[in-house]
Structures are given as C-alpha cells and as structure tokens.
Image (tube, rainbow, N blue to C red):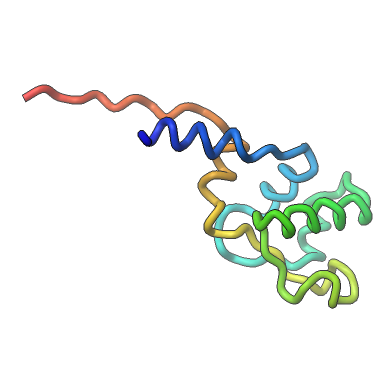
Length: 108
C-alpha cells in the first residue's frame, strides 16, 4: 500500500465530531499530559457533562489516555489527559486533511 493510500485509509477511519476535535486540539499532539481543570479552561463552551461524555468516547476508542482512570477519579479536574502517541499523526491528518505537497523528483 502506498503512503497516499495508507493516509486516505487512516483518515477515512477516523470520524470526529466538533466536541472531539475541540478536545484533541486543546490537548495538542505532544505526549505531555494536560490536567482536566486546564482542559476545562481551554474548552469553555462545552458543559461538564458533554466534556465528560466526549472524553469517555475518545478514551474508549483509544485516541486519548487518562491517568488515573476517569471512573476512579473524583471528577475530571483530578485526571491528566494526553493524545495517544500511536494515533497522533492520524488524528492530526483527520483534523486538518490538507494534502501533502508533491515532491518533485529529479530524473537522473
């Protein structure tokens, strides 16, 4: 499978809604975790219940990680979230599907 076909395949498999995109953008694509209280501060237009639902969905699919487990913690504020590094590139491309510039090959 060529790189272009692989990229199209990955992008077609990742379907995110607006809330999920907002969360992933707020987290960023580095492996650095972001505290839940800071995440809530970056996403002000989403209710706490909607934020928790979107986070649970992204965790269940594996796109983001949470430490400690959200269900064991006392609310979102005490949990650290991060984008799963295994999906970071595919998520970045799914959120911003700009085509890669074509490389000019030089004939020898």
